[in-house]
Every structure is written in structure tokens, then in C-alpha cells.
Figure 1 (tube, rainbow, N blue to C red):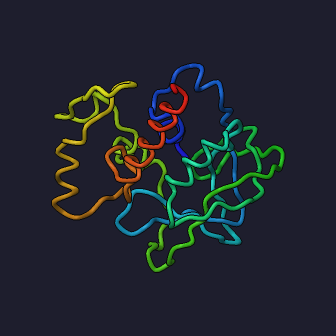
Figure 2: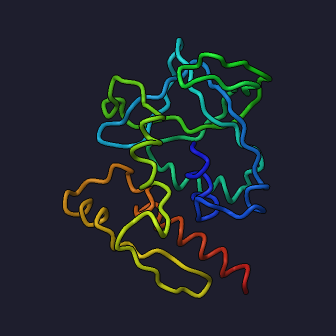
Length: 203
């Protein structure tokens, strides 16, 4: 997962504080015998078993039970969290895997696609394309969306979803993030959970 998206899921912001960043250790890693396919009409990929392929990603240490709970919400019913074995990368090569130098094998967990494979395209999902063209709607931010205003809530600022992007999505009845983007329904649920945690801590 792109670290900025991970931070938004766990901490409610794609630009966390230095302290929040220090809670997690993020290292490049590779998962063998799996591939990352494109999902029809969606920005995000599906990881499925594939004996002759590999998926490069990140190995994250320091996640709390609460972080994992939020990640479960974020991934939704299309995925299932499963234990797998990965290899860390002492040196991360290019997007095609050239130049990778593998390190230790470790047990981890990842989210495997369990929805119908009929919803998948044949091609490999392109992480570079995602970062260049699509990631902005996944991480949000006060400066990224024209026309977005702020409303003051008891424990901080929250973005109100009145962007042109949001209106276009509603008009077309489509959401390429599947509700997981900065203006999505799953994000609303995550924000509600985070606000509830703050209320519990404040009591």
C-alpha cells in the first residue's frame, strides 16, 4: 500500500505528524507466487495467487490492533486478510523488479482478492500510473480539491465533501475508488471510527 494512503487510513491524514510516522517501520518487500491485477472500472488492484509471478509492496511493522481494524474496514468485503510469507528487499530495483536484492523471509499478512475474478482485467495493475494519475483522490487534503470547504468539529477540522469530483461521481453513479478515496463512503466510516476513538480518549 502506498504509505500516504496507509497513513490516511490509520491516522486520518496522508501527512501525519513526525511522532505518528515514528510508530511505523515501512520497508520494501516482495510477495512471490502472486500477481496484482486490474479491477474493472476501479483504481485499485487485486492480489491473487499466481505461481509464476511476484508482487512488490511494503512490509509494515508497528501496526496496532486498531490500525488493523481500520485497514479491514478500508479493504472491505472484496478482500480477505491472510497470513503469507514475504521477502524483504535489501535493495529495491525498478518497477519491473530488475535490481531487486532480496533479504530475509518473514511472515506477514496481506489482503487477497476473494470477490469474483470476472471483475478483473487481464493486465497487470500499474502502480506508477496510479501514483501519477489517480492517487490524489485517495489521499485528499485541503489544497488538492477546489471548492472544498472546512467545517469545525469539536476535535479538529474535517473536510466537507462538496467538490466537483464528488458531484461528478454521484451524477455518474460510479466511484473508481470503490468508496475508499478521500471522498468515499468507506472513508466516511473510517472518520466516524476515528472520531469515536477521540471521544473515548477525551472522556
